[in-house]
Image 1 (cartoon, rainbow, N blue to C red):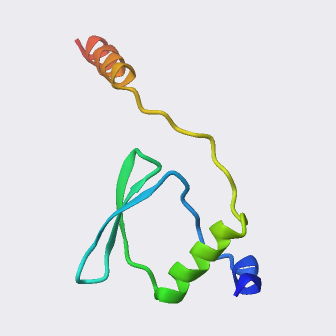
Image 2 (cartoon, rainbow, N blue to C red):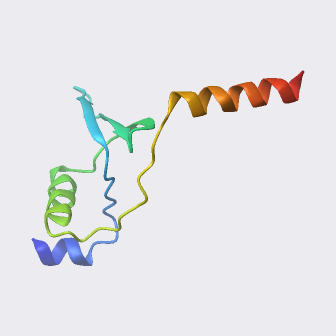
Length: 85
């Protein structure tokens, strides 16, 4: 299975992401990188298995950790509002 994952270009790995829900219609709700909620429909259980193995084998690209701070968000909103007024 590891060879399949290494050769697969269709597997994306989202680190710092949490599965929040699995719905009866097959959709999976994920909090992607702690900043956006996405719904995906995996093609099949094989795709999920391949992704898990890819992470286990450390065959993924690391991304810079994204940090959300309320004070930064509020500051940006204030800046936006001031530019509009």
